[in-house]
Length: 373
Length: 99
Image 1: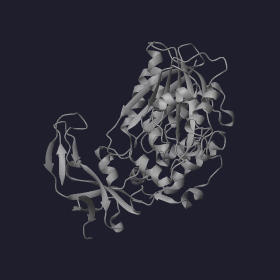
Image 2: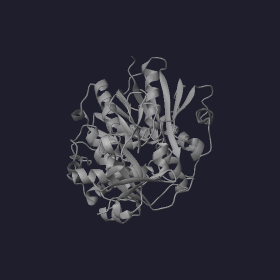
Image 3: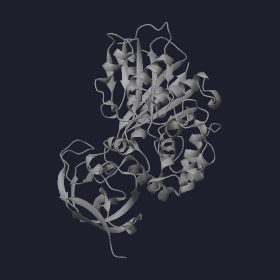
């Protein structure tokens, strides 16, 4: 198997953007590439639902055409909100197999053009048909998990808000983040109630944005050392645990084994905090903390920029924004910057980084480990 | 209450052909409708086509099967609350027992 390295990475500012999705992808592509860039062997486009969000299908061809990459093979990967990391994973396989030597990964979504109720309906299709017939939305399922976690581990509503406060702080240091302002616990608790006990500021935003990453078999300073991927039952009601997610545990185990690493080896992680409860549960499922200890880790600053394992230095989905298809690749970009010492004011000391991207309601998860070399 | 079991030990609410755990054919069974609330939420921001608020509960049936359904009465939203599942217009609802 060929070794796989990352060369250029690029990202757009996330938020409510006026430009088309292909224009955003071009912007990310322009950041990731140089004028001397040779041709790519293939393009992998991570995008969850351009058909419904922007009214375009055949999107892989549209992107190859828009970028002027005439005749280049191009394929779109839809893997729910794990489309970005799934496109990265498929691109990795294509280089690791020796079939290709240099490929372009693009990922993005444009969600803000539609009213929130329609965007909510589109996102609710990620949920099992019976469960969504009850009216369940993604925040509703997250609220069910949150309520049970609070009950089982004694998490208070104020403590949960600290996850949003922390990630908004990190977002103030990230020029690409949708939200670059500090918030307080009180701001979270007085924001609109979405699904009790989750308020608006507990939920990642509807956002637009795109990312680009170049994978190559030629040695660079960042190597992809392990990718793990796992699914779980589509229905929440089929699962044994409501406070831990098996798809994260299994994906992480596979990634750690392939990278020959353990949780204690990880210096920095970007995890999928689509809802504040996930900022606590994900680090537990990734093996950084024992079940229930994610609360103390958050309160004591262990997951802050100066903590023992900084989580979401970018601001995470909460502050960077969550254009669903883009998120997994945005996490890769952040970890590459952290490993290269290019993360500016949010830089942490790091040689080994981990990305954790969730598809669906925590049932199609991908964990990627990147290392300096 | 309709449910499905598998020789692998998986049991799920409602009818289902293949086991989500092992892929074998499942057997349809009937469970009693006494249930207990595992967790709940009141949903205020709903999808297009639904009316807020929606009271949702995830309940545990016999043998550990779980069901997500609506709850008729806000006062029944409590972890550990015992009650029954009733069916109206082909939809399942949780109703708490008399206290």
